[in-house]
Image (cartoon, rainbow, N blue to C red; front, side, top):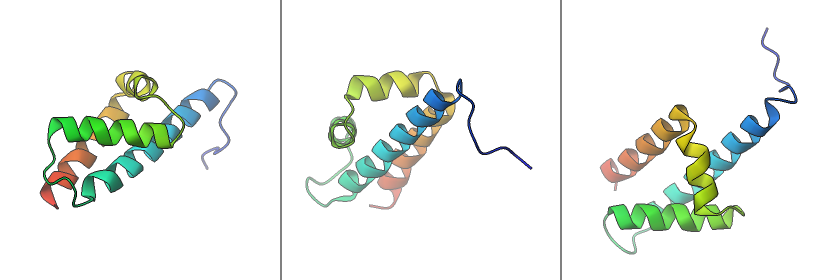
Length: 87
């Protein structure tokens, strides 16, 4: 069975991933809102910025975490594509 308690070294990684996932969920909510219409690159950045601020982060902190983690970058890409397809 897998140990679900992170070690001291893993805690910052787990915390950062949780922050990013929270930002992505909130950004998805913002992007699904009907106003303004369309999912432009500017709207994606704005949604991520608003979501990061809502979670107590700066967009630069979010970007730094995501840039170090290919899985989080892929999750971000999938979320954006999913919103575009289902809007």
